Length: 180
Image (cartoon, rainbow, N blue to C red):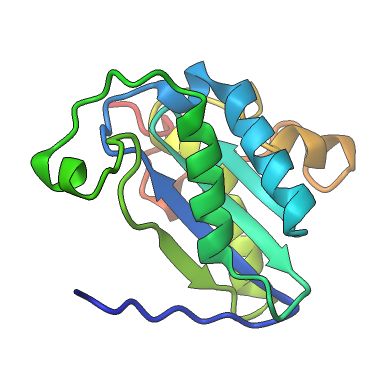
């Protein structure tokens, strides 16, 4: 069995990407209230700050900050996935490998984590998080995607409502924001 090494630092921010097993699914946006509830339930048990989050139909990106050295983001993600999965009916395809381990087939087994190194890295990952729905062609403007903390940050005055056009090239999109 592979031994994954994770870095856990107190007072640190992490950029996390979590994917569904079926990358063509719309399960997350179709069940957004359940996913929100999963985050709230886990956050009540293991406090963390959601600096940024964007939920797409089949994956989500989030930038979380932990102040406690005992905060283990692997446990937090596992609990969020578990809480969400318990609220979804069992009709997904389950591989023999997952069946042997008594796993459901909703989520990819692992997730991607990046320890934020400095302020520029922090900003770059928030930008990536918020621009992702445009990059994937779900909307033409960041403000049009409803499943994002971008709206909260606009209300706080951290971003202008029309933010996003200037970063299109940086994320590999053409001037038409990923179309074509």
